[in-house]
Image 1 (cartoon, rainbow, N blue to C red):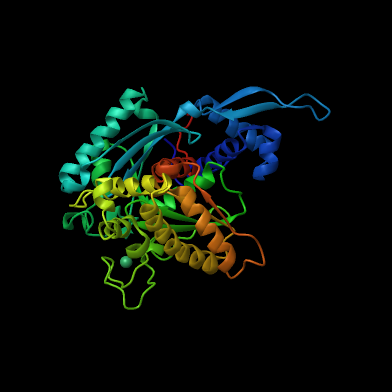
Image 2: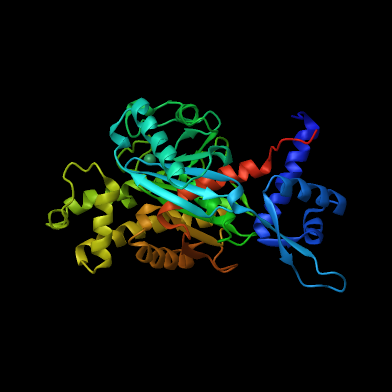
Length: 406
Ligand SMILES: [Zn+2]
């Protein structure tokens, strides 16, 4: 196989062309040349290579602009796949996406939080293998897996820098170990960043938008994307809005800060408040041991949506606090859109959306310069897992490595 700078440049060019075809859905060679800045002969050659490898197909003819109608090209979505894995304190979600980022298969399971890493990861790997087998995806068509989780993390090394769920996970090389088990490349990334990138890649956000994502699962995270570029900070541990302090005298948080937003707005806080609110916890059958934040929080959210006044008050209390994070994020980054993503918005999302949008529109610094909208993610609960698969596709397409002709 060819190697070195020439091959790297060829693979990058293929990636650029393939990504343009993906984004356009159907496109002609002439349009590709115009949109990429590449010459028509280069486009012809790259498209030929992509077609020979089955990644692109011709799908009929477009509208004539005088001469012969142009042949339209489309991605062959079934040519490659990627896996997205959300590794959460209370749940693990595995999805398979095709080359276009469409969901092909999904599974989820509980229990990894109770296991040490050397037992949890083989379980995750076996679920991935089973899902690929169930949908009949051949292994040589899988580009890799995007493992997404909370922070802080060392994204480059694929290591979690947190003692959650237990102390054994701190410093554990989660991505390299899973890669070894799956015999696939595994990327580690932040769940909120993955959700935000997925939203953009799937076309749910305008290309020139500067938008934020508030991601809520068992904790609260955030991400900011401007014109398709994620703000990464120094170490990809940025925009952690769950851990901005809103109370100088507040309790110490697991992150080391005091009075963190997550401890007022997050599912754990809402559950604690439910146990302190009359007989609400008993009525809803919440687990007194408090092991599964997501399940107990979902019960409170469902009761709030059904009109239970005590549950509604708790969700509103959470939303009002989360709005502080949303306004802060919009003011710091001059956002025009905030996307709410993650499993903890699945049930009571509309309550959060309405209240947060109202607050953001009243209080964001740049509100007279442009509107700031708040929407729910198009990928809902699975936004981070889908984002994980998208990260792999994005990275695979950026440097698409194909066998070279002799
Ligand atoms: Zn904190």
